[in-house]
Length: 114
Image (cartoon, rainbow, N blue to C red; front, side, top):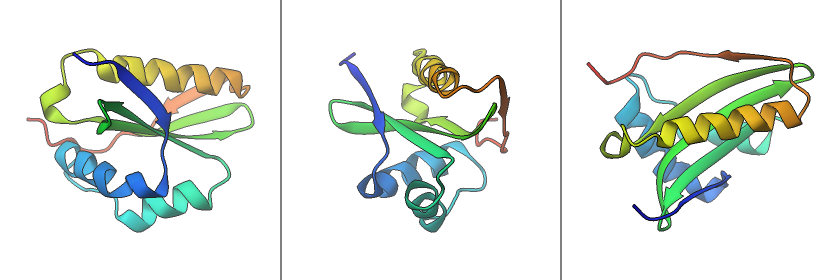
């Protein structure tokens, strides 16, 4: 497998992130939600994971003082089972720790996986 890259999500990534979201959850977020999170929510931190320049997953968190909440974490179905989600979660956990979070929660949405 090519090298994984985790980087901050940009506005231009939203279209591909929506594809990951739709493949992962029974109810997908709209592009506007992602645009607002990236550009207007000062507590939001969104990252994508890519291989060879292709977005294969993403994660988001809100970090407010000592509290962090992972809002989303998703990996394209064909890349699941390769510990990519685990690496992305560990990245988000470290991000929360560095930001001073003392507690972490995970928001759960219904998955497309049966």
